[in-house]
Length: 91
Figure 1 (cartoon, rainbow, N blue to C red):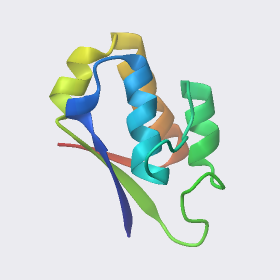
Figure 2 (spheres, rainbow, N blue to C red):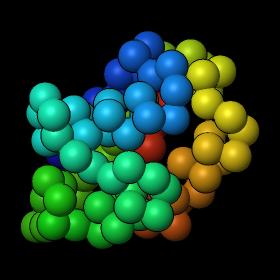
Figure 3 (cartoon, rainbow, N blue to C red):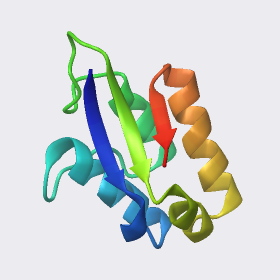
Figure 4 (cartoon, helix red, strand yellow):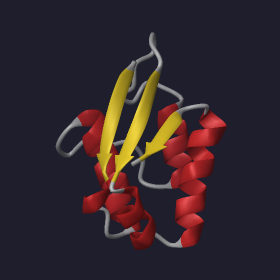
């Protein structure tokens, strides 16, 4: 299974969250949404994730990322992954 690793220690703001998601999927300067609605669209495929195999995300240092984000963004992030049926493993 393809795994995308998001570096939670580098998340200090909402903007950083989307930057790190982009880096995890599409490399330096990669894009993978700039808000929760766009993230939901990206998780649907065609923006760097495989179309023909399952994939998951791992958020390292998730406790640091959670502290950096407001509760609505954190809850929204979890909800987007849950609604898309994509695993987001918190480490």
